[in-house]
Image 1 (cartoon, helix red, strand yellow):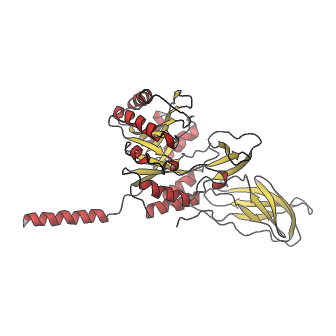
Image 2 (cartoon, one colour):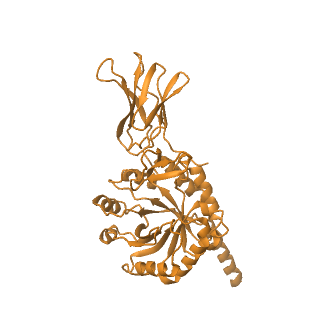
Image 3 (tube, one colour):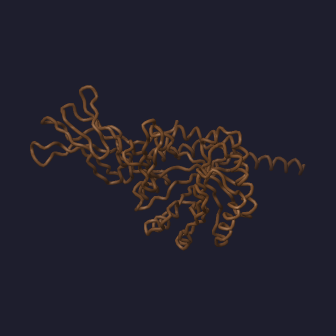
Length: 403
């Protein structure tokens, strides 16, 4: 009787555990900056309530195999009260390296940090898919040198089709799938539908917990005449002179919708989000800190952008085409602004060009910059007939929910 009762109790507990809702997705952030400016220190301390861990770049093996160690502000990290995952980047263009020697250097760096402050070590190596077996051999050499320090790696969507991926993902304790990338200028920086497919496919290749890396930034991308990628300007200026270019931007409301989708329809093994990178006041290509906080908290003040015609300084002067973002959150610039039919001459400025469609005029975003919160910006000028309405249709939020 007692044995039967025990079996019933265990079965009941098992069913209850299976029906329990999973823990909320945790949020980490990459601290990728090499220079620890006052703005970075302020952002880190003021955002500690949002994150589980900081993932801090501490070293890099460059394309020539040289190993560079950086100096994060350990006092500021300690003051934030959050654990630190040490990140070592290996340049994906590094064709070959001594796995044992590099593993020894990385392990020495990791074990030299203050005891109790290190939550893990992460390897960020965007290697070609053909090198996955060599990468696995390196991780096998590194893993025993770390002792009790958990090991994680970043992973690329391009690896998903490889038969070597499962064996690679079995070595670290967890992985971080990067779903933000510049594959081609036409593809943009972040496509929620494509990212959703990558996450689902990746989940079938690992039996370990994993996270998803999402962007908080924009990039200026240049490409050659044949469509091949030439340069990406994000953290540092890298745009090639004279190249065709475009501004790519991860719209905050798009990312908010995607995170909600992940939380509501979570693949097996997904435990959190890692944001690249921690926004700061001096990072002109990242979201504002307030916008990032809104996305993590699950709510953005995303009012529609307003487009108005501002009269010139004299009666015969053209109108300025103004875009207003009155909300508390950053926004993607409008991709297209249709001008009134009563306007017959116009031109775009600040990343906008004029396009004629039948009898109408439009301003089309080419290299348009994001619209920070509480920003008003001129994107062109136009000559119109008397009586033309000065307020155009509002531009809706840019977010695209994932179905």
